Length: 470
Image 1 (cartoon, helix red, strand yellow):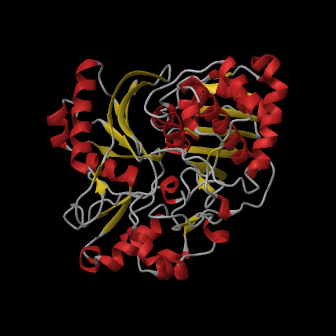
Image 2 (cartoon, rainbow, N blue to C red; image 1 turned 45 degrees about the vertical axis):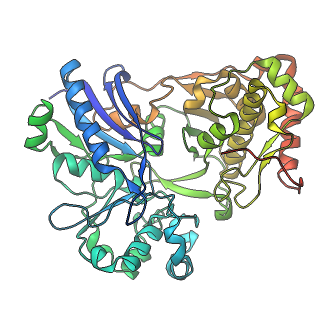
Image 3 (tube, rainbow, N blue to C red; image 1 turned 135 degrees about the horizontal axis):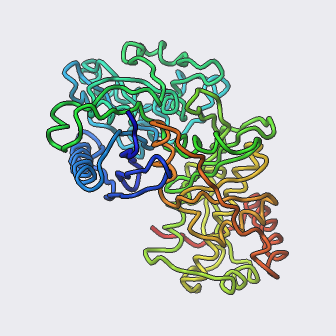
């Protein structure tokens, strides 16, 4: 059976989408998207599961009618899991990982969680360590937690909704959860310490076909009854997967969106610092991948405000000449400068929208290069996701890193393309060499000097900075 059209359910923290990917060209031929929100209701802020499910079914039905769907893959953000009862329903709502509830049990959890050397998971705030979420739920809601029979990481939850087959998968288990030991490709000591092994379904590869869709879904959507669903993958690893097949090592992938995730394949064997939000991800084949991250998409949105401002080299020149800086940390509990109070070095209201956008681009480039340096990345930098729509930003990354930068051709669906490749690899994904630092023209020396001054600024007390805003 051939799988020409793959529907990819792609659920990010900010948006959810269903993209139809043509396997032969590995291009997106249709997409449906909605904002992804949180239900602010007892027992705690949680995922709007039924709203998302209705959107998924409606999208699958529309894509089947428009183009035809041959197979389904799922990719989602991490730090999210579903606890299922024996009847397949949720024992508890799926917790929003930004909810501060798990902090109330932080001291107890810290005494139980394995060392960074075992898991490659740094200690993160709120529920960003999945183990912290599960521990808090177990302590706060013991009866409902006790009724759970399976724990499914987020991509596998949606695959279960589609097929009725429960599975575990390493890319979601290995993304700062505290539940996985990447060096030995097995569950961490925490799983047995807290009696959670009973909740873990069979391990399946992200490429494994879990089964066909449930009969009632075929009826509701018009999909073929034998439409297969593969196991699913964590979104950053979906972004990485296509490039593992075609880039010469060493190289790095920077996956961009709400989160900016830098991943080094090969490169220098550096010691990671968990205090700076470096971590070990796990690729689809279970191999450890040195990684670092910050919440770049959200930082950028806060810096430029609601309006999507355009900027050019003239705006960049004005910012560089006056050394206007946006300094971390903006989302203060995460990233390479977690705990540092960031902000603007000048009142932002004195800047034009274009100047704010130019300064925000310099911030994103500087933070990205910092992340790459921390994980010992070498060789070509492949950028995928939202950054690829800004050629000046790509030139800034090239200028500050001193390395070749490529931009993946799919600007907004790098995760979807990678997830579709779980069904059938198809052709190699093309990444086009971006405009290099020479695109900055006469500004290049000043930009590099600005980058050095930015690095100095984040290591010293700058005094009171001006607020970035909501």
